[in-house]
Amino acid sequence: MESTRKQLIELLEKQEGYISGQQLSDSLQISRTAVWKHMNELKKDGYEIEAVQRKGYKIVSYPDKISTNTLQWGLDTKWMGQNLYHYDQVESTQQIVHEMAKQGMPHGTVVVADEQVRGKGRMARNWHSPKGKGIWMSILLRPNLPPIQAPQLTLMAATVLAKMISEESDLKPQIKWPNDLLVHHKKVSGILTEMQAEHDQIQYVVLGIGMNVNQDLSEIQQEISHKASSLKIESGSHWSIPKTIQSILRQFEITYDQYVKEGFQQVKKEWERYGYKIGEEVTISTMKKTWEATLIGIEPDGALKARDRSGNEEKLYSAEIHW
Ligand code: BTN
Image (cartoon, rainbow, N blue to C red; front, side, top):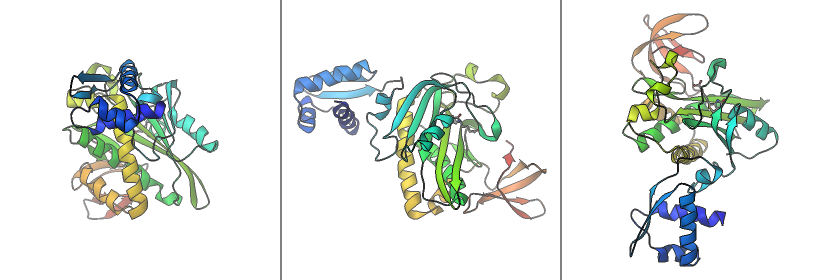
């Protein structure tokens, strides 16, 4: 039943226009009445489906409500998100995935929540994760890599988000090193990568993605509203959260598989293409100092390369770029 519905959505999605009831019944090997019953179930789940006589069916809009079903139906990935859990409210999806990793859950396990009450950001900051307004999701990865390559995964994830935003809208996203997603100079998304490693091998990585999707201007915390935004504010339209999650998972699988096969070179190229203020002068702060430097690009190990005003080049592993 579940898998029939999943296949049904995949068929509807693939078709440019309408797909006839007969075609669906042939492909799924079920009766026309069964097709019709499935359509009614999909409508109950929030799919808007148009049925036109002699033409067939077409998906008009996708459900907004997240559930394991609305996330998995139509998700045509091989491993990413095939093991997926949805919660209404959690402290942090990171914490749940850490526990799942210890229990032996597979590579590609995904946890999504409508709301986080203790969302974690980088540098021990809080990550505001209001109910139903964004994507609060953690992914379990089990890469066969040495720990030194973990930063590459974070940079790769940033390119995945940038590509997804470019493909789904007219927005021109940028990545502020290492992995903040900016649109019109404002942060719409961040990535938190946490790793468990032993000796020279990564045991697992929990890669958390926080994305502000449907907040209105009044819903952005006032103290950060000069530098934070949402996809809705910047694009002027509402985004379907389940559909956006699916696009991220699909793009993630493609990019990750390519990275494993071909190495970091392509990721580096993509990252620099979206890189914020690459070739420009910015203010950089580390624990020790704050200075002006020109951003040159990223190194194969994920470090940021910058040149100060005296021409000295430096590789940075931990720093804040002011914007
Ligand atoms: C950043 O500081 O920019 C990173 C933010 C990462 C937030 C995400 S939301 C899903 C996952 N769960 C958390 O508690 N944090 C990450």
